[in-house]
Image 1 (cartoon, rainbow, N blue to C red):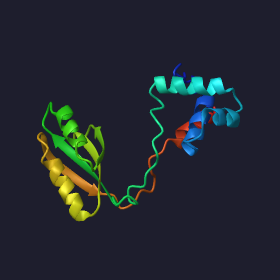
Image 2: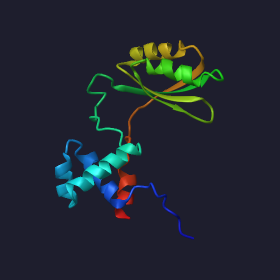
Image 3: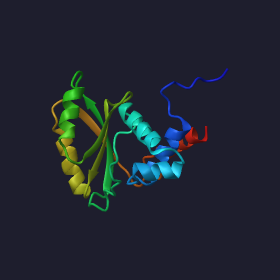
Image 4: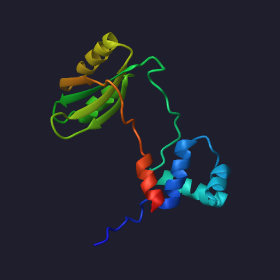
Length: 162
């Protein structure tokens, strides 16, 4: 039995274009076209389509938070009051050191990535999180290292090879 590829899946050219922009996000459309061996209009159309589909959401710079003074990363699992997820998420988004919030299944309701300048600063951030109305309980773990940083390259490479 063959697996069917959804019509809106990435094709090899999309993947090669995204890999190129992952490696060099400041490349212009013309240079992308040159490196990929396709017309400028093809690259522009692909970028427009990827953006319209919500796959390509922007070109933010990659930042080293430790170099910015936030050398401590922690993860908190939050248990929240039923029916308060949106309200709690909005309040968490107002805390500058909250980098990501994911609604989850399992032990907790929300999984939160936090950064801080020191252990004392982390305590301050956790106190802010615990003070959010609707947060019932937290469990926090400090990241010691990041052996596999956030990535999409292997997925793009698989599609590019197809």
